[in-house]
Length: 49
Image 1 (cartoon, rainbow, N blue to C red):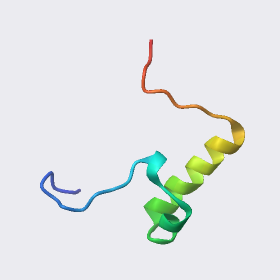
Image 2 (tube, rainbow, N blue to C red):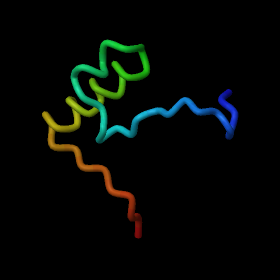
Image 3 (cartoon, helix red, strand yellow):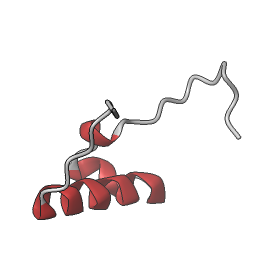
Image 4 (cartoon, rainbow, N blue to C red):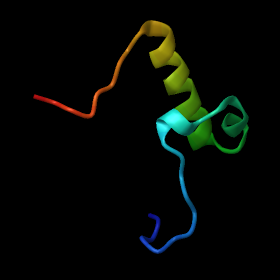
């Protein structure tokens, strides 16, 4: 578990690019999830009513 004071920053799903996918497994999974959602038209909204 990462500390709240950690300087390491993770990228949000919308910020992940193809070049980031080669860094580590978490970035690869984020990139593949983003690509899948774009391909199949899945939209994620932060507002739920």
